[in-house]
Length: 280
Image 1 (tube, rainbow, N blue to C red):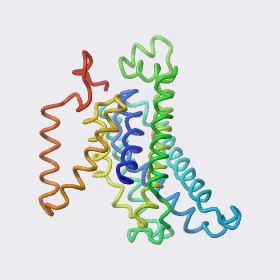
Image 2: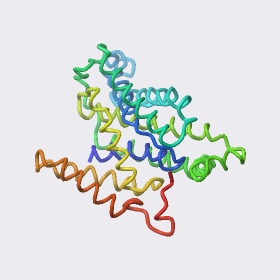
Image 3: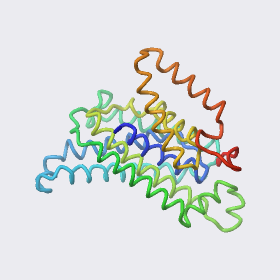
């Protein structure tokens, strides 16, 4: 259940980038990694001093760590967002893919956070209540943003970026805002993940992890928050259930994904007159 909630948080955060303004990011795991390491450093390296400052309140320490992870990921999103979000389509996807790999390699070469060995000894602060609470906050925050004037701007950018610019909409601004908010919640999800697993390593935030999140968004229906939530839960349960098949697990899982993409290319949970239209 905790894993499902964490996956919902990271999938919904990516849906804000890929589903609404119509971008295509392949480096979301990089933001998750930045958040995981930032939050873990707060609770391991500065945890004792902060606990004294907070009067021994571990929940407050954990909240600060998650916030630090989200802010660090958002700053990383700003670094990549400003130069890259002037790109479109395949060029943007390649740029974000490269950025995600850069983050992984940098983390792998920083001895202060364990380098290639990874970072161990992370306290297990993540609980079901924390993971569900963060997932609920993420869903509400993105729902509120999408149903505001910002959301109208996102959809305008997705429908026709050139026409949106002709109408005076600053498309780069809207894309950067979506990128920052999505990266922030990905960083928070990374902090939850780190304090649930007690150990993190750079290879856990590579290209495969990014693709895993993208699959959840696509199968749920890009731009469909409820569908993405359901797909994240379904794919998490499927992955865990298939562990009993050992080495065949990934083969069966991959075949399942291929079948679902062939039978429901518009997303598992998208119906109605707009069902056949991808918002990308």
